[in-house]
Length: 124
Image (cartoon, rainbow, N blue to C red; front, side, top):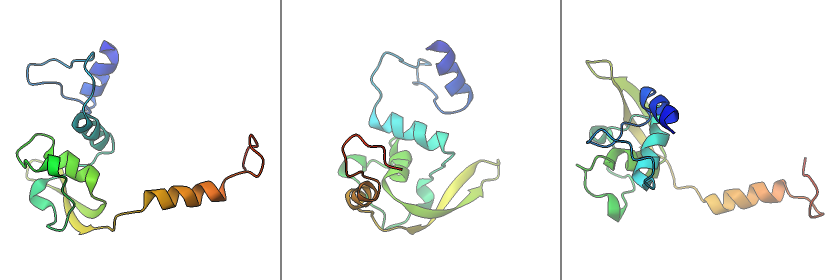
């Protein structure tokens, strides 16, 4: 996995642990997974530019935790404007929290529209 880890590190998707290791044998945490997805999607959450009406989970109340901003990014559907600081680093300024989606209803609507009358048939 070394080549893939190095590629992900070179791309800025992972940084590793404070001791300089990556721990490829460890199980990934939710916070690590969310952070990798945000970095892959080029999302740059900034707690100084969140909105007061955002959803906050009871297990993500520590605003100083390394994963706080990434978890908030993954938790809240929102509109934003991308800005750059004096050093050219991008960050999001959230402008609006979007309504919580009913994913079960959306999945059912899609499934109903794309299902077949006969099991095993390919819907098309």
